[in-house]
Image 1: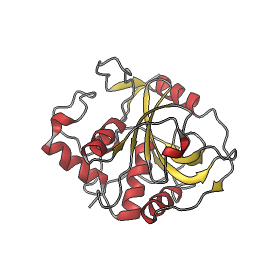
Image 2 (image 1 turned 60 degrees about the horizontal axis):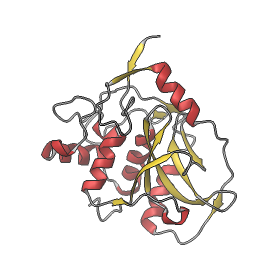
Image 3 (image 1 turned 180 degrees about the vertical axis):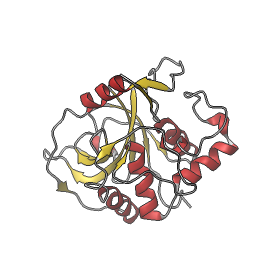
Image 4 (image 1 turned 90 degrees about the vertical axis):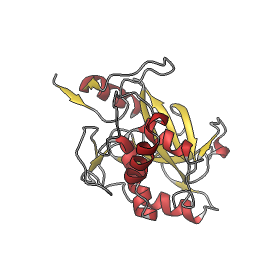
Length: 228
């Protein structure tokens, strides 16, 4: 099988402190995603008392459902600022990037690039880069984690569903040590126990009951005031 270059931190060795290679085989990457996609879709139930900023963010994310149908982690050259690949394809980070652009006009590509230029040493060195790459830096989960933490948006990870409120961003580790990120919504699981998330875990943007399906590695609440 031919090798392809993937943009998110594939091959991360969780907890090992070792740097991962920047390339993985397509088979290994896709096997991890197939494992993560095993849960069936769930009906939607709506909760109340959603802050306006979160309502806008979630709506912008849910508007991607039925539009982004393909998971494509290949490296791509992008325009700058506000660069994007065709909306019918993307990865988990693209759901977040597009939601902030559509909801608030906030460009994570430009913001992450500017912060990495000023504070490159504060970001992960997983990919062996010596300088920022505005084509993919913002599309890598570990970089978004570092950015949100630097902006004061990091919150404690919890195993209590009630701690996760609409608009929260949750990073996870999928099978195969694949980092992932999702947006917590105001919609509740059919059993009434968990908020559902909007994400792209391998088959396009979807609303699913997957909040606690994988190890949660981070929780962030990045409101418009922080995005100013």
